[in-house]
Image 1: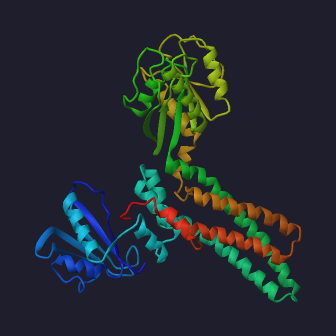
Image 2: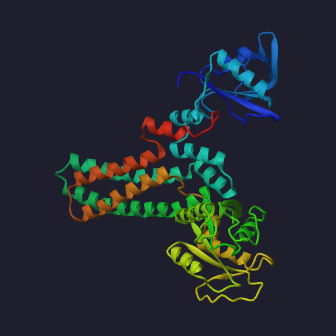
Image 3: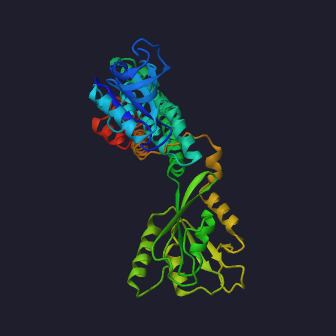
Length: 447
């Protein structure tokens, strides 16, 4: 933390501009060694200056240099950002000169790691920065931005403050055992706070599923026997001719994937090999992969051919997916229907697009997407955070039983402190170095 780091903060390639960022106590003086223009050590904070980066007498690039002095910066350290032309050669040359003049190449995510360690952001916000960079939909962007702004952190900190109130009362009770009324007040307060904390944890965890959907999207498998129209349906759902469509059964032998936005949520549709008994070794591998995919997706669209009566293979597929989240689409209703099917299903075809809109409506209903996109975006979407919240709730449930069974108050304090610490691990009030290394290694170098 005492050295000065630097890294290219923009994607490396040909472009109009690339930015090299420096952070640390020597950031301004190191940049000033290479800058031909104003004396950067004397300029005001949060200002931009025109000039050249030079290697002795040689001009390397024409640049704009931003100078931001601590503590009002991203890392709470002095920061310099050098705006170069976006060529690969010039950008790398400027980076090379910085490294030769006292900078160290930043590790992945080290700028954000310093922001966390210096107290500018907490761990929830740090993780949200990474999510914001990789957000692929407007909904996931809003979710990540809300966490960067600290909305989830505020909820967690409120819970911790409530626990602190109880712990303070317990300490008074332990220090002054002769006052019996204090113990009674503390027990009643504990009951109320535990109930409140449990309710809040329940709300947060209930939203976690929605948060995962917003952040990661939804995987949908199109399942059915060969030649029922799965590939055609995929192409219509993603509005792109991604999958090959022929009248030959078994054309799709491997998975074909395509994405589409529905109500602002990204759906990854997976066209699978038709499930049937086959002697073809290649097709057999595709069928096996289809069966594996069924186990891992969020939704199955089981496609049946409305032109034909149900076959034994159809029945096998329906039975195999019966306990899964599933919609049934009966295809080819533009021709005389011969299928005899009594379960709820959506009828349509891929020629006139009939039924496609209804299929999308049912998908929205299945995942309650209208509710997700009209609510605020304070969701938990991180597996680490969800695991800690679940651990905290287990202890809270035990505490509810212990309070009713008149367990000594000092024993209750131990469990309450565990909950306090678990919530602190979410925001990073308590952490292990190994955890930070694992979290930040997935960041890009310049963030």
